[in-house]
Image (cartoon, rainbow, N blue to C red; front, side, top):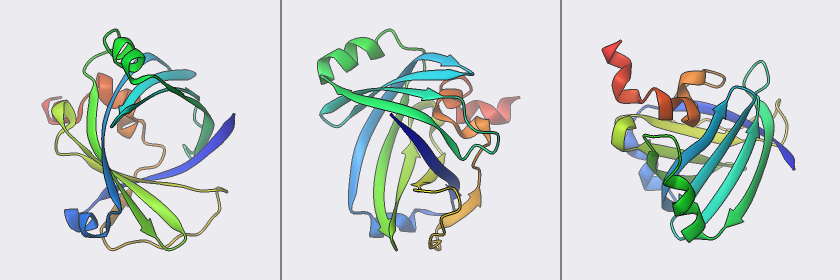
Length: 159
């Protein structure tokens, strides 16, 4: 069990793709999106995962996270009963300085949204900022995947 420390940013353009070391397809859904806990099911390429996340800190930088690999077939069975729409995205991993950014290019109901995340060891860690990194959105709930499953990016302009 661990505390996840993460900062989240919008991405200015797709120039990050030239620096990517890998790309994976992710499909994820939520069995629970309660404000104090989230239960997520995820398939990444050929592996399945179940993750439980606790409530975020006041600034959105950290929260409890527990994750376990499960058989891909079981993950698909759980996705079938998850809240919809499912989150579909391509994740690019980009080493940058001493850290690694994960850039998610969303598809489906969240098409048009691209978000970068960086996990840190400590909340006050410094890191290099690539030219393609945009506005910081850490702590803005509308960018949480659990929230995107209920209020997809494509619906934002319709309110």
